[in-house]
Length: 221
Figure 1 (cartoon, rainbow, N blue to C red):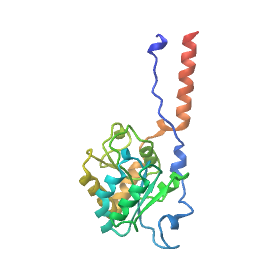
Figure 2: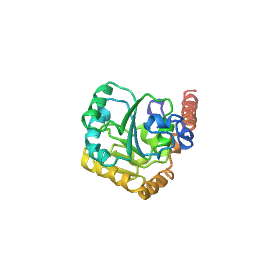
Figure 3: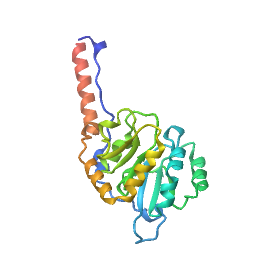
Figure 4: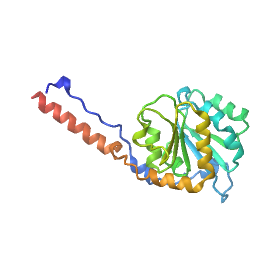
């Protein structure tokens, strides 16, 4: 086989164990704006750059009633980006600032996920996002839109609610269902832990890359 015909798919790897075994962050009370010893709220989390393609603004509109009607809910948005000020203003406009916090850049996303109960992604255009793989590694139920490729790890009605694209009403309904049903959260979280994401392990990425280059080198000789 000529070299020009060779190709290999190598998944973008990450440290899966880091997300599977993470502890809660040391600044938990500050992150949740809670007094020490207070009962932990139901935490919704989204790891995403604060950019238009991630659709934070649309998601806040869709979830504002869910958040306002469930005072035990706290939404954490981890990431930096050009829309930070606009997102912050929208939170105030929707009068949910006591339950929503923009965390900015975090070097410990695995700890944010460890203390989360439900993970979200509102993107309308992506492949299989790294954040979704991290959500699954952390063993959390996920609510997201039907992006290309997500069905590999996000199984609708099993470990995730995979919503038809741009159906914000159903997105909100899915979040509401998880917020109000702790047994469902537990069941879907447990199902998430059984999804095989080993192909995205960083060691697998290195091993497959090395093997491919070795094969190419042999063919060139």
